[in-house]
Length: 122
Image 1 (cartoon, rainbow, N blue to C red):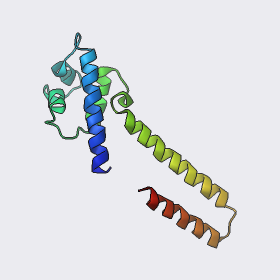
Image 2: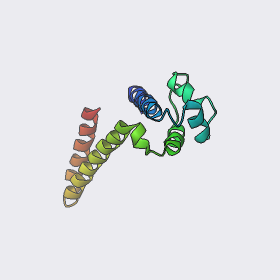
Image 3: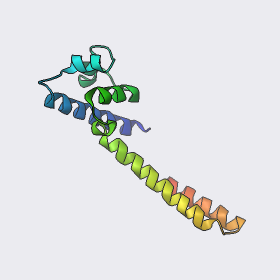
């Protein structure tokens, strides 16, 4: 995953984690959440204070479980990014299905067109 995307997802995660903790301040705090998630007692505080550069997905999953929220509540744009990738793959599959009746030369041309499209999207 590109660094700028990782940075964006990390910032989004931290912002959403802080929002949820603020909403639930009457029942939990960073230390309690860390312990409930099975992490070190300063883990959440370290994440929020930028002492943890980029939390592992496993850590995010543990925190989501302890908060009783789906992971996409903490990182919604990660899901959006995944849907974009799926849509692109479905489009490529459809192109290949349509090309299945073409001869060998045409199929190679189709593959070249798909590769060219991938390069232009980067």
